[in-house]
Image 1: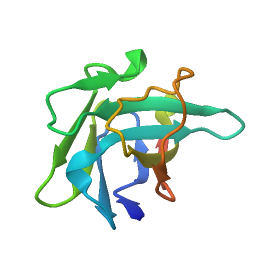
Image 2: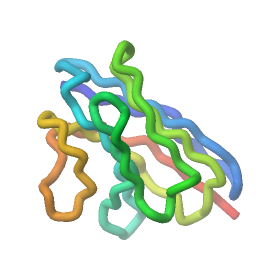
Image 3: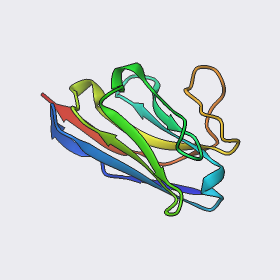
Length: 125
């Protein structure tokens, strides 16, 4: 199973970035897909998650209204559109998959089964 993120970069406050994650090696449609970030010196932080059909989504409160998670099951890809970026959004962004389709928000319900290697997002003021 391979998850490969792309789309990170260095931007200024207020800018937008679009992250993508392509999944191979298993049935993408069976996975709930999440985005998790980690800032330097901090713990991992749940950002967004989407269910297999795209109908169910959850977001970290601080990104609601600014970030949108979507997926294209025909292309085995999950996306994270990030608008109005702030310096506190800086970190390595990882996509992650749950093989049981559980929309995990890293609140004690267990970890994701599959992880990408991450893509760096840096927002400067």
